[in-house]
Image (spheres, rainbow, N blue to C red):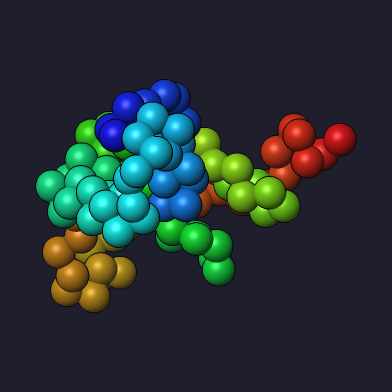
Length: 116
């Protein structure tokens, strides 16, 4: 079932993962897909991405730092490599005593398909 998550810039919802999995394994249940996704997230093999009020998406690019670019119309999502180290740019006084270990940055815009 992991092969349904293969590919560049894949950010599928659980529903989309299930639909792709059913093409290969018609008997697979939604519960199995949700359990599989949850297990991969807990193992650090998938990132769970939540944006706005849309469904959670699952990102297999869990081992390379990146940000996301999201179309505000259709919800399409792409990975964006970090341009600089934003974590090091947060001055110590602004960290409020937090030990900061991660930064999530989301760019929002309109994709070429929706701009037509």
